[in-house]
Length: 418
Ligand code: EPZ
Image (cartoon, rainbow, N blue to C red; front, side, top):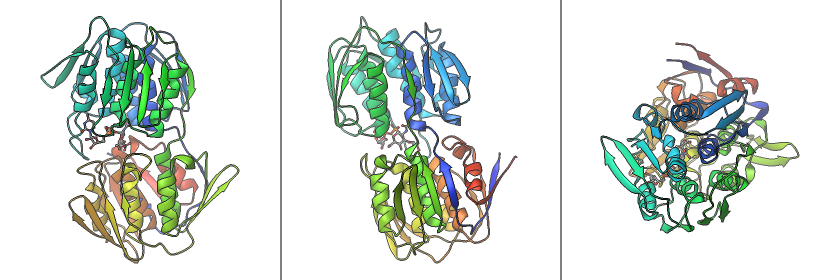
C-alpha cells in the first residue's frame, strides 16, 4: 500500500485548480441510467470512487467511453439490474443506481452497503420512500430486491433525517414515476441541486432542487445530456484549511466559495483572511490561529466532510475549540492519529474538545477514512518533522492528485509506492 511522506513547515504559496465534485459526479453518472442514448459528462474527477461507479455501470450493461476527464455513458438495455456486494462494500454511493434502475427498468438488486468507518449508514429512508411509491421490496442474503409494476407512483415523502443520497435516489426514481412526488425535509446540498439541474436538462420536471422541499412531476422518458461537473467544494475547503494552517498565501481557482459560506465564516473567525479575486479566492494565513467552536449540520450548515480537516487546524490554534459532529456517529477516527502527532483532543460523545498546541510533531500515522486522511495530510504540512501516512488508498477515493497539487504549492510531500 502506498504511503505519503511529508516534511512539514513549508508555507503554501501559488495557485491551485479544483477538480470536479466527487459527490456530484457519482449521482450524475448514475442518472445516465435514466436515458437510452449517449450522455456526455465533462470535468469528471479521476478518483477511485469514480472508477467504482464506472465499473458498476459497466457491470449493469452500460457502455462507457472515457477521454481524460470526459466520460460518455449510454444505457440502451441492461444485462444485470444489479449492484454486487463486492462493489457496494467499497463504496456505499453505489446505492445511487437503485432509483434509476427501478424507475426505468422496473427492477433492481442492490447489495446493502454495510457499515463503514464513519458509521452504520443505513438505507432505511431510501427504502421507505420507494415503498410509498409502490415498490415491492425484499431484503435477503444482504441484498435489496426491488421491483414495481407497472410503474412507480408519485407520493408525498417526508425524510425524518436529511439524507443526501436518499434525496438523490428518490428524486431520480420520481422522474419517470406516474404522477407528482413531493420530497419534504429533502437535502439541500449543492450536489443535489446540480443533479436536479441535470435531470431537468434531460426533460424531467423538478422544482425546488437545492431546497428542503422538492416537487417532481413524472414524465414518460428522458433524453441524454451534456454536462460539466461543478468544482468540488470539499476539495476547495481542504485547500483553504491547508493555506490557513501553513501561514500560506494561495489562490484557489474555480473555488465554489458561494457553497462554502459556513466554512468561510469559521476560517475568518479563526484569523484566516479570505479575499475574492477575479479568477479565484485567495486564502492568506498570516495571523495567529484562534480557536473557534464548530458544529456539523446538513447544508447550509458546517459540512461534516470538513470536520476532520478543521480539527487539524484547531489542533494548532490558540485556545479551546469544541467540535460537535451531529451527522455521523463515528466520525472521530482521525483523533487518535492526530494525538500521535501531539494534538491535545478529548472526545466526549459527539464532542471533541481540542486544546490548541504551539505545534504538532511529525509521526507515522494511519489513514482510516477519506476525510481523516485529508486531516492527517494537513497536520503533516504544518507539523515539525516528518509525517508518514499509510493506507492512503482512502485518500485516493476523493482527492485527485493531491500530493501533486500540494507539491506545486511548495509542500515537501511525496508518494512512496508500496
Ligand atoms: C453523502 O453521504 C456524502 N456522500 C457524504 O460524503 C457526506 O458526508 C454525507 O452525504 C453528508 O453530507 C455522497 O454524496 C456520495 P446521508 P450519504 O444519507 O448520502 C443517516 C465524503 O466524504 N441516514 O446524508 O450516505 C446517516 O446514517 C462522503 O465525500 C439514515 O439514517 O449521507 C447519517 O447519519 C462521506 N438512513 C445521516 O442520515 C438513511 O436511509 C446523513 O447521511 C440514510 C441516511
